[in-house]
Amino acid sequence: MYLSSLKKEFCLYARVLVEVDLQVPLPTKVFVERKNLSFNSISGDNLPAFCVHCNTIGHFLGDCRLVKKV
Image (cartoon, rainbow, N blue to C red; front, side, top):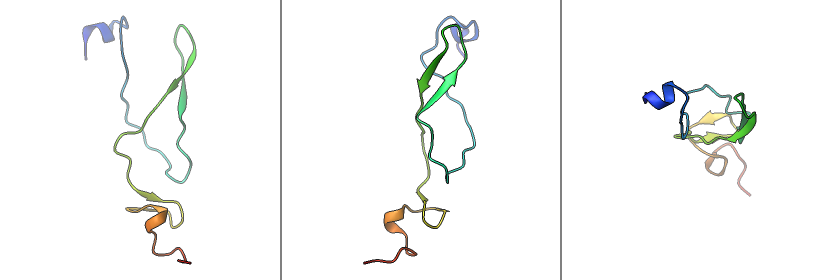
């Protein structure tokens, strides 16, 4: 970690690893407590394909074999 980050002098972004429930929509912002309290945008990296129909990791809804094709 950079010395300036350790001293909390300067930081462009923070990267954290968290576990999330893929059945719940991911938030787009989080509240970060610091001198000037604010909401900050977040983004997910390397999120797996997740089907909201059958709750399975590995494909999206459009590719789900369990959805009735019309």
